Length: 168
Image (cartoon, rainbow, N blue to C red; front, side):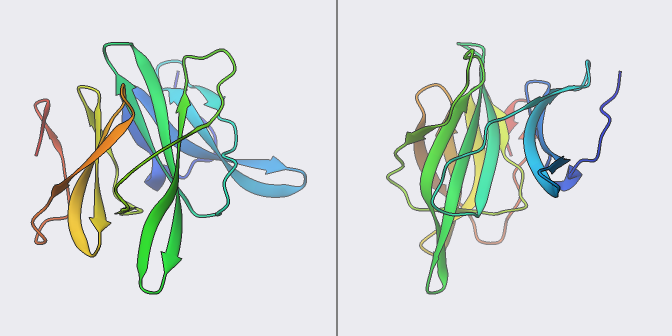
């Protein structure tokens, strides 16, 4: 069975065989994009609750913890101050829970994820390219502990890949 529907494919992310994407849905007479998790083998989308945040610009990533066998969605609100953009609020949704709801978590490293770069989850660590004080970094989010760290990145590169289970 395939995935059907009207999707924003460029925002599609995957982790451990599941896909995180946005589905266009008519809500109260208005077309909106709703975040969903989908198992491509069944084609069944699971709609996610809305993030209650102070800012409208959101960036999300899907991660998987292979030890606890849990999927989590990391969502950040983005703020702009002068010429610099940073993540402000960080929320996590654990999908294994019966009634999943967003929890706010702390991040001690202000950073701005590249909006159209996909995150990569390898062995329970979610990696994505970001900026920290105008420096290019790889942000690392431990899906199990829900802690962040940043690795400085060569400014000539902007893409990361999963090469045989290693970050490349």
